Image 1 (cartoon, rainbow, N blue to C red):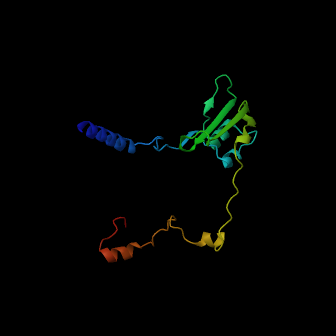
Image 2: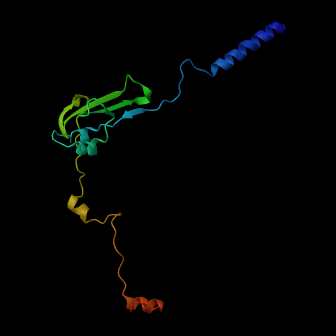
Image 3: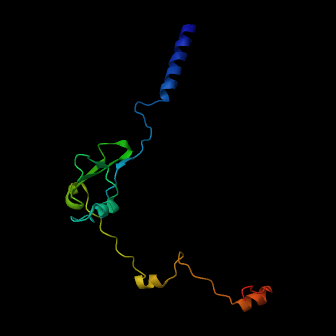
Amino acid sequence: MQRTIATIFAILTAMTVTACSSITPNFYKLDMRQGNVLEPEKVAQLQPGMSKRQVQNILGSPLLTDPFHQDRWDYIYAFYPRGNREKGEERHLILHFQGETLARIDGMDTIPPPSTPAPAPTGTSTAEQAQQPSFFQFSPPDTVSDASLSEETGVQNPTQ
């Protein structure tokens, strides 16, 4: 009898403990972004003949600089949603320089085309928007003359 109770208790304990676990772990994985973010709008600004400094101002410093090929800059970007490499996105842009000027761009096929700009909102024209005061614009306070200030406060301006 005690052996049967012990067996039932062991089975119930095992079932209780295994009910709290699952076969596949369901922990949260972060989105992985690595490298230089290659935005299509910025990549579209690149043109042969630009200087290294102009390219660096647009895209930032290259991720890889090869000491054996100083005239080649590699920009690599990888995005894996929730760490999933199968559903991820990779972009690799290679810039070739001759001296200090951009000569050739490889890897443009990995960059999606720039998105079209959204149409302007209807209702108010840009001229009307320019005339409307902005919250961030500074408007100086009304100037107060020294005479009216001294009348209100009873204090004379010492610079006079």
